[in-house]
Length: 155
Image 1: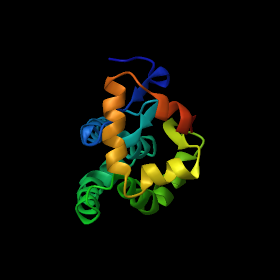
Image 2: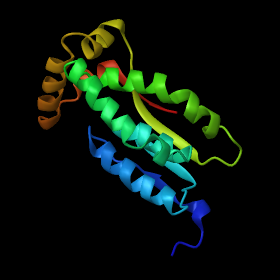
Image 3: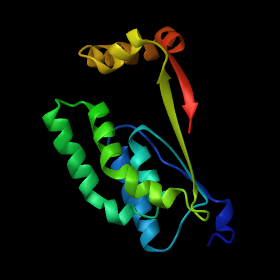
Image 4: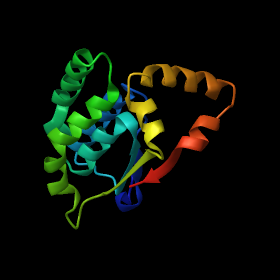
């Protein structure tokens, strides 16, 4: 048994539907009264960790993931749209809880797109093609596009 829970932090894994697994584990923790002092997340684990930090994992439950699948089907796999619609749907519910004095710390890692041209490439019609190219570049250890167009932000 962990004796000092105020020193425990949880980092949620990311990568599309790894967030479903993270959400399930965090919901199981919530049901047993376990809350970490901090949650770290990025990408697909952001909503799951935000729900856990707000102590709303179970309340959000599978509704989020079913909604995410609906959005993906409607938008031909646009993950950005899943995130944007999720922010609209859940942010007010989470914010009420996340900014209480006794709330766990929530740390979100994200990338900031530096230029309008790069924003169009990442959000426009060519986003899927760019994503594939960036995967190939990563395998070749070429991060030129990323270095020139993105910067890390922590919230």
